[in-house]
Length: 145
Image 1 (cartoon, rainbow, N blue to C red):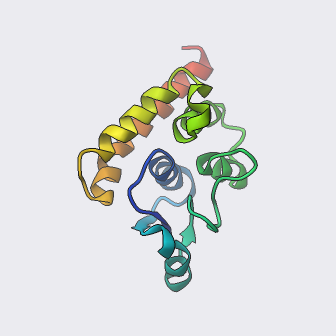
Image 2 (cartoon, helix red, strand yellow):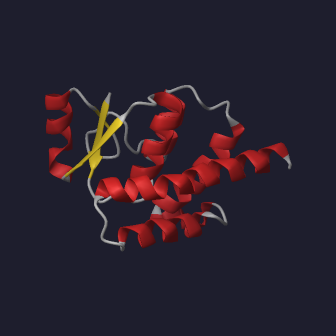
Image 3 (tube, rainbow, N blue to C red):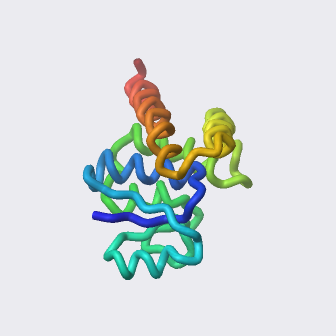
């Protein structure tokens, strides 16, 4: 399945592809397009849209898109994902940057990757391991290890 979002990924537009490929759609193709083209590309390509104005999955009810995907795909029982979601929430929503002690660090990582001048796809490829590590850390935190 194709999934489409805004170009120039920051936290939510990397965290969501990680979640999508890891738990929802392992074969997902992620498309990054200009903000104003997300809905048109989704309609034309039969893609699911996320983290963009008018997207199927986007910020709502105080949640970032990563949290919305967790809720809408029935993953709220995964305590590690819930812990990870709080970190992502704080990193993605500037007004809540202190949601967790880790959130400012994840935001800094996202900004650092953005500053490298990579293509969106290359940034995604290189940044995804950060989310593997964050999930592993969250699993350790909730298991008490």
